[in-house]
Every structure is written in C-alpha cells, then in structure tokens.
Image (cartoon, rainbow over all chains, first blue to last red; front, side, top):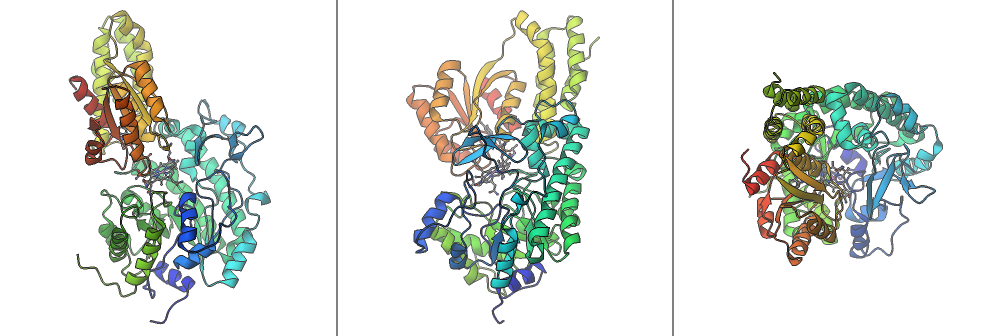
Length: 384
Length: 210
Ligand code: B12
C-alpha cells in the first residue's frame, strides 16, 4: 500500500477501514506529557530548548510540534487560549477559574477549594453565585483560527481541537458543588443535579459553538471536555443515572458539532472501567473514546468485538506499569494493544493519560517506534 | 414502638429525614442508644457489602452515610450520656503529591459508619503531618490513600516515617493502583480494594463483630 498522509491515515482508521499503518497521537487534552518529562524529552530528541508554555499553573504546559514531528505522530492540535475550568491567578494571588470557583495550589498542580455551591440550599444559587462565562468573549478562542488554518493548509496532519475546557458537565458540576455533594444530589436532589448539569452544559455548548465559529472549518476532530464517569473497577454511578444526567448533555454537545459540520469527528475522554456505558456513548453520537484505560475490569478484546464497528478507540497504552517499565515492556504493550484494537481500523495508538514523570524519554520514543514497526497493516498478531 | 429495622432500612436507602425521625422516636421510647447505633452500623455494613459487590454505586453509598451522620447528631448526646464511645480512632489521608480524594473520603465515611472516630487530614498530606496526627490523636489505624503510580512510593516514605517516630500504629493502604503485594512489600499492615472491604478490614483489626 502506498504511504498515506497523516490526515488520510487517521480519517481512514476512524472510518473503520485499515490505513497503511496504525495512526498514533500524543498531545491531546488528556494524553500529553507532563512538563518534567517534556524537559527530559528535549535532549533525548536533540532539541535545543523548550517552546513557550501554552498555559501556566498546570503540570502539562507545552505544545511542541517539533517533538510530535520527531516522534512521528499523526495528530496536531489547536487549543483554546483560555479555558474556564483552568484556574488562573487572581488579584489576591489566589487561583480562580472562569466560573469564579477558587482552587488550591499543590505544585505542580491544583485542586478545587470548597465548592462555591457547596452549601447552596436551592437552585437559584446556580445563577446567583456563579459567574457563568460569556462564550462570545473572544478571549477563549483568540489565535484558534490562525493556528487551525495553518495546520490544515500548511501540513497534512490530522487537526484536533483540544478540549474547549478540561472538565465536562459532570466534573465541572463536581468542582462547583463539591464532588461528594454533587454525587449525593444526583441520588437525592435530582432537581438541583439536573439544573446544574444543564447550566454547565449550556455554557460548554456555547464555548464549543464559539470554537467552531473560530476554526471549525479546519478541524478534523474535536475533543469533548473530559468527564470521568468510571473508576478502577466499574462505574462511579449507575448506568441509569448516567442516562438521566449526562447522556443528554453529551447528545447536546455532539449535535452542536455535527450540526456545524457532520464530518468533524467527536472524541470523548472518560477514564476508568467504562464498558457498561459504551453502547450509550455510541448512541449519543460519540465517534472516538479515549482512553479505554487498560484495567482488569475491562476486556479489551470483547469491547473491540462488541463496539468496534460503532466506536473508534484512542489510547489504551498503559501508563501505570508498561510505560514506566523496561523498553521491552513498552514494545510488548504497543504490540498487544495493536493486536487487540487495530484490526479493521478504528484505533489510534496513544497513552491512556498524561505520561507521568516516572516514564523515561527513551520509553516514549520506543513506544512510537514500536507503533510504526508493528502497526503496519495487515496486522500480524504477535505470538506469545 | 419505633422500629429499628426501619431505621436500618432508612439509612440503607439514604433517607435522612426518616432516619433522623426514627432515631428521635426510638430515643423518646427509651430504646438503648447502643441498640440504635447498632441498627445504623449494621445498615452501613450492608451498604458497604453491596458497594463492594457492585450492586450500588458512589451516590447511593454517600447518601446512606449522610443519613447516618444526620441521625447520629440526634443520637450522640444520648450515646455520651450512656457512656458509649467510638470503638477507636483512625487517621486517614491522601499521601503527598496526590490530590485524589473521592475514594479516601468513602473509606473515611465507612469507618465512621462502623462507629470509629475518623481524623481526615485531606489530600497532599506530608509524612510529617501523618506523624504529627498520630502523636496527637493516638489512633489504632492510619489509612493512606494513593491513586497515582508516582505517589505510591510516598506511601513507603510515610510508613517509614511513622515507624521511625516509634509508632506501632496499624497502617492500611488503598487506592486504584495498590495491590496486596505492594502493601506487603512496603510493610503495610493491611490493604483493602474498596470502601466496603476497608470497613471489614478495620473491624478485623479491632476484632469488632460485623
Ligand atoms: C476522578 C479522577 C481524577 C480527578 C480527581 C477528583 C478528586 N477529587 O479526587 C481529577 C480530574 C482531579 C484527576 C486528576 C489527575 N489524575 Co486522575 N483519575 C481519576 C479517576 C478517573 C477516578 C478516581 C476516583 O475518584 N475513583 C472513585 C473512587 C471511589 O475509587 P478509588 O479512588 O479507587 O477508591 C476506592 C479504592 O481504591 C479504595 N481506597 C482508596 N483509598 C483508600 C485508602 C485506604 C486506606 C483503603 C483501605 C482503601 C482505599 O476504596 C475506595 C472506595 O471504594 C482515575 C481512574 C482510575 N482508574 O481510578 C484517574 C487516574 C487515577 N488519574 C490519573 C492521572 C494521571 C491524573 C493526573 C496526574 C493527570 C495529570 N494532570 O497529569 C491528575 C492528578 C494530579 C495529582 N497530583 O493528584 C491516572 C493515574 C495513572 C498513574 N500513572 O498512576 C488514572 C488511573 C487515569 C488513567 N487513565 O490513567 N483525576
């Protein structure tokens, strides 16, 4: 097969056909490298110095196309200039996000302080206490158009619009209300839980629309804001509750994108053991699921057999044991996930989450070399 | 006659109004505070077991714990009056560098549900802060939570610091990446895969019947 361009390769895979080789990705909202590893990757790739960080305060701050070029990945990214769920330094030096929610710093990261809605007694507080972001404010999307256009016209890479805000309806509601209180609302105060979820979704839908208006004609894929509905061993909430609150929110976000241009692929990030929700995600119009976290509770072969014709998967490379392990273990992980997920297309190889400081730069380089070597179609399943 | 089985059922269902009013009624009728407490801890025991089995999820477990907490506000003065004390004190926290706390909070709730006084140190807790809390509160058990492979080694550092301080407190660990093998390797005294089992684990240590 003649070599495809990156854009063709990813589009082919996401159309559930086999491209020339398995596409690869690094640098998205939930699958970049943490800053510590970035700084160690540069010398390992013989690159002179870092690029300017694209944001501050986070533990993932660099978007460096030179790194992606040298690793040979197929996707390139556009990102919002600001994102409401990423806190910035306020006037008093404290951290505050775009909803007015204060955050605590815990270098190199941060976590929400007591939710501004934590002690709210009724739904009126949702409008009163939160400064809902104005999606028409150009600050969210400044620079998006120029970069998207440059990537679309000047490269043959697959253009991905990074999450317009890191947290989706469930996690944003948890930030604002306090995670436990919001989970309790879901069970015992459905009116509050529904009103807050809907209001957060309105806000995110507005931002997605602004993102599309800014650069949508050049996007190949959009990442929806991340929402972790699952845990290590199963779902955090019952499928019924997911369907009640969050599936409708996903449907709204997806249809905003598909109405703008149906060809744009939609990716959703949800960690943990999410198998029981995959049917609903496909049904809601999600095209690509990240990360399909490799866990004992997830039978990846069975997931591929059951949902592989309706969903594509991005990720699946274990960052807990395999990537911090030996180079041989990294190569074995790449071969295993390729054999499980790549047949028939529908798989983009990528890490399951941001690659952490416990991973050697050589291992990351080895991962993408292995993907290129063992990801040639037709896939030959490794003999154990 | 206030029905303690109904109280158990109300706590299990997370029905805090019913749980509180049944507690008030039972007290008014002169039911022994210990019996009322037992009805609630038994509810939390079965909530924990159903959670471990995957029959219920985090929201249902949280509202059950809340129902017990609110009913306990009514019951506590009578417990004190009758000389009923928490069976023990435990200290819990998420280790330094780690900010995940949903799982740790569930464990803390289940321990409270087993009538254990819990001192929750929060997230990103330094080894020294654990040592200080153990000196101050003299718990029988310390729980360490970690959700990241990069913060798991901090569990060992914390255990070493606790032992270096001369404490022989029981140390139990948990969190998504933790395995029983790891617990053994770093000389923890116990491990539990989920909040329901964490409550059973501490009951074993205390030799409290379930
Ligand atoms: C929700 C979540 C978050 C939320 C946390 C919100 C909060 N307030 O806690 C947010 C979005 C903030 C987050 C952030 C990050 N996360 Co996170 N997160 C998760 C997720 C999806 C679920 C965790 C959870 O809440 N589970 C629900 C509870 C109920 O379950 P649990 O925590 O496992 O707890 C149960 C048991 O483990 C046990 N238990 C827990 N503690 C204890 C303690 C004792 C004493 C005992 C006995 C038992 C016990 O009982 C609990 C109840 O049953 C996991 C996925 C996963 N596989 O677990 C990733 C995950 C843990 N996160 C991950 C990562 C990488 C991160 C980040 C580092 C990402 C980044 N920016 O680089 C940051 C962390 C920053 C930091 N320094 O901590 C990775 C870790 C990979 C690794 N190398 O270890 C995971 C596995 C996701 C993945 N796809 O790989 N995360």
